[in-house]
Length: 526
Length: 110
Ligand SMILES: Cc1cc2nc3c(=O)[nH]c(=O)nc-3n(C[C@H](O)[C@H](O)[C@H](O)COP(=O)(O)OP(=O)(O)OC[C@H]3O[C@@H](n4cnc5c(N)ncnc54)[C@H](O)[C@@H]3O)c2cc1C
Ligand code: SF4
Ligand code: SF4
Image (cartoon, rainbow over all chains, first blue to last red; front, side, top):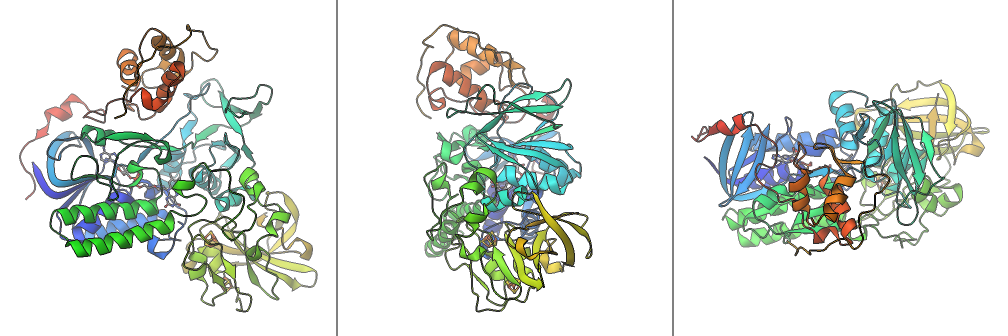
């Protein structure tokens, strides 16, 4: 029997953060993860994260995972891989399957940070090869380097569906459509916009009714749904796809909490069946905690803080942390958490459809919610998206209140401000001179910043866009500019391609377009 | 856990066009199988699992539970919260008997 001060189950962002925090306080911590590599969901995330610096914003997910792992190693935390916890027994004993052996371990406290599993929806033919979860698509692309298919239908427009759609495009797949049964796109507008501007159509109020094909997916039938989410006969459309990717939400993995005897509750806002927990994540079984997606589906940024909160509570109870220091830290973490749990996508606003304005009082774009892009007349309502300074200047098409501020930190010249409340929309200070360095473009997690010079040459404007595809077009290349909806609108010439290491794989691609398209051209294609 | 409400379907079993839709892939249980046992008198998630084996395959209900719970609840006209869920038991993942036979009882680490 192995004995520890703390056992953490799951080496995702919640578990690793909990382990690091506890180890720093002097606790002897063991982490078990059933995967062959640590990091949980983070190791599949190749995009830049939201939040602010304290939440690792603008870092790519897998880098956050690497950093957490390095910290854990430095502190001597034992991270056991290929180690599946099979059950939690009385007296905080766990049974671990490691390779082909079973091992027992015991601790004064246990933190369950097992994350979540993907939901599936049954439809005719859903059990055919070619119907896969978004997580599987990500693992294939980003871990194994394999394209999941050639033409994909994405079912689900939450952040997972949007992020994975973009990654599929980056991997060289075609995305035939993103559909959602809800009347509006579920994820961040900026995530939807970067998919839409490449030409991917969005169909809200649509579901998949059949996977066609004999032995594998050879097509998909989608249909419009009524107010009760039932397909409306006669509205069917057939899409020529070889893969149907399902991203319809996640369910917390609560079985281990069940084996420990924790009270569970079915809570739709938290994503399914979850343990009843207090403000520190402690379950109804004393000294057994639950943190991260296992306690309620949220984000890696919140999971990291929740893991730490449970860890300091366990440390305090076991005498590794004084009461005053505990309270100070708990308050600090609670404040950090509440910065993230704000805005139109915050957990408390889940499912709300009555929001029509931003906190600033600007009308929310209906087109962004329905089709994934802003209509020109909607853009004009946002001051940060309609700057017309002389010379090159940023144009920021970030129009929903989301917890995010890397754009502010990126500009050394003070051109962009978000302020203390990080869900506020960025504000551009036109009195500050923009040098065109491109750091804001590269740092924006939503790829929502463009650099525009309306008078680049007589009759021509230049538009700088974030570009994350390979091969990167070379200066001098000629092609087309696409608008926000992904439709080609005019000829374009690439005039410069800027990249520095600090831009972390986001290239600033500047194209020259006829001056009248300066406020429409938002993507480039050869 | 919330209290389980025992109910019987209010109408007789009426076949539906998608009754042959597979709900539990691991154990190949269809929507019709589930609806029929509910009409035969089963009314909780656990009972249906024990009778049909849905949720007892490789995924241990991770993929299918949510869906078959929904079918039972709809058939009974109750909320999924009212019919309970599969009890989480050790081992929460499938394992071979060999693994259990290789039980390490001595402390390996210092
Ligand atoms: C496509 C996608 C994009 C995302 N983008 C963002 C983003 O931009 N920003 C953001 O903040 N968040 C993002 N998220 C969400 C984020 O990844 C999750 O919220 C976060 O990973 C949850 O962390 P966790 O530690 O709770 O769980 P996980 O990361 O899921 O880790 C759980 C770990 O527990 C292990 N485990 C499970 N059961 C057992 C067991 N019985 N025994 C041993 N180990 C076990 C698993 O192997 C896993 O490693 C995204 C998620 C997805 C899928
Ligand atoms: S391009 Fe550079 S100078 Fe201009 S706003 Fe962006 S970060 Fe600031
Ligand atoms: S513009 Fe700023 S706040 Fe908006 S997504 Fe980009 S970095 Fe975040």
